[in-house]
Image (cartoon, rainbow, N blue to C red; front, side, top):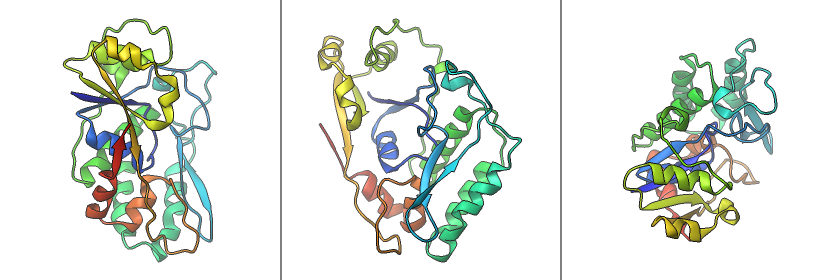
Length: 236
């Protein structure tokens, strides 16, 4: 079984979904310290004129040691309306604006207390829209008994060892420097690094903005085109 493990990101970029699609099990890892200004509560979409801007989920105040699983959404702010207004400029240029807005409306029709529950639902919703339905378990709710990790790369290793029939662990290429392959070899787990080949698509402007949220990809590309992009990867 091929396994991927990632922190639960908010409408992440295309490579995240490629990893979900091409692994047999994908775990949302939420039992480590939350780091502000990452990809868990925000992502990037096109600005109206040029460049990009952040769409963001406001969070309640928490202390620095709070774990991702305990991060709660601040519903005192009208963040849903703000995000919808931030993507509204796509209406003039994106052929799939209404399809994407309907997906976001569906997500926003529900109430979520935690950022993990919101991100889990949004990830599963997008996967279903793209034609590969996935259930994404949350690590803190899996009741796995794992060995205490002694190094950062042992979280994934020990989770894989506690799961059943894991033969391969896939990680994004960007995290390759953190891993000691020998540890995985000793556990008979083949460590592989997933590298998606990001291609340009027509954003209806002169300067292409790469690596934006999946929202941008959905706006300008059909389901068939996106799946071709998701399948354009290599293992290292």
